[in-house]
Image (tube, rainbow, N blue to C red; front, side):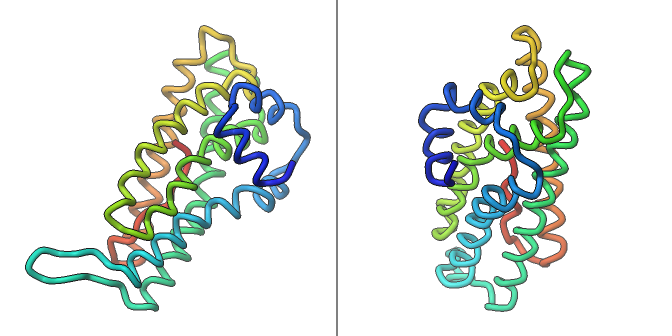
Length: 199
């Protein structure tokens, strides 16, 4: 399925799309090449443009912008950590599967994390105007809903275990995202936005 169709379907009719996703044969490299690597690039590009060319207004000090080198470095680090974070979050979700009577599958967990991340990645375009970047949090809420709908089809989770598994998975993904954001800021020595992973 092409990228535009998949994005449209997962955002507009996720209940119908998750069973299709769950049944698709794919591997980690293909999922990254055709989906994750493309969409995960949106927030770093948005942040780069926003923080390097638009800037943030700081009261009494004017507008703060990154230098070109710092902006490029920040975007690259953010992107690399986003790619790594998706995989790490999927491993964590997969490892929790048996505790919630779900079927462990690294590729299905990766599908769950990747496709649930779609709204957050798309909202990363708002980072072009730095003050709007915080609105991406709202997209994260929709990501949680997508994850809720996707847990049963992808991980074969029984209905009574969906909510507990979702809560634990969401917490794990949020922790991974926060850690990657901290590492991004530490390595770039700036307030460059951390990677958007998952919910």
